[in-house]
Image 1 (cartoon, rainbow, N blue to C red):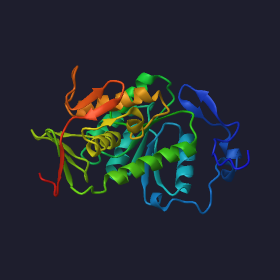
Image 2 (cartoon, rainbow, N blue to C red; image 1 turned 90 degrees about the horizontal axis):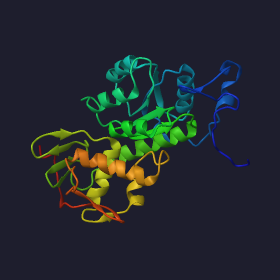
Image 3 (cartoon, rainbow, N blue to C red; image 1 turned 90 degrees about the vertical axis):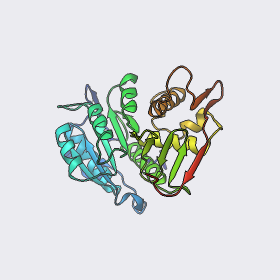
Image 4 (cartoon, rainbow, N blue to C red; image 1 turned 30 degrees about the vertical axis):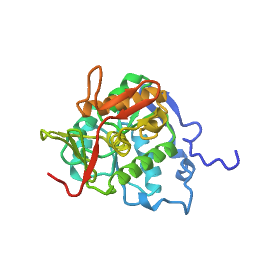
Length: 288
């Protein structure tokens, strides 16, 4: 089709298996035919961004390494959980890509470990899965993944999601007048994304959690409909928008200790959406 700028996997190379994408006879195909990269259109904001990818399929690692490197990213790839943990501890990354099925452990345990790690608990995470089971995707999102992508997938779509998450992370670091937002019994540092309860407990927020909380804090005492909330979340293609929004709000309520039959902080407005029932104030400095 004329003008079609999609970057598909090469014809004849994709086949399905229990572990997702597989490729055959790649050595016989010139590298320039595997990918089409537009010249002169490189987004300079991605040049210094680093990505750490774990996937047990070597050919997928090589293909994504080539494609994302040509897009301007610094890419490191590993094949199992043990090597991923070592690479993660060696140097920080701007974004992580975790395959769910690995030979020594699954991506879920890695995601949980990252969110509890003092080094980079807020780093954006994309999970890759060959499973069509919604429960697996729910688990990943509940553990703090920011986005999910099912196999087989287009490298171009993965790149778009990477850039969207990096933009969101960069936007969240911009100082919105006050460095610390105060609401109900909570204090949110808008620079470090650290959330503290008045009793001193720190709650780890994923990028998706932070984006949704910021949306509520920017619009206190206002009803937010599902479309508005959906635009602040990721993985909208995985399941219906209503399900995605409910999951995102439920996860944020858990972070804010706002559970039970009648949550008091984030209220459900039947037929309309959700509302943050709290006064919001800001102050300069970290206040800790």
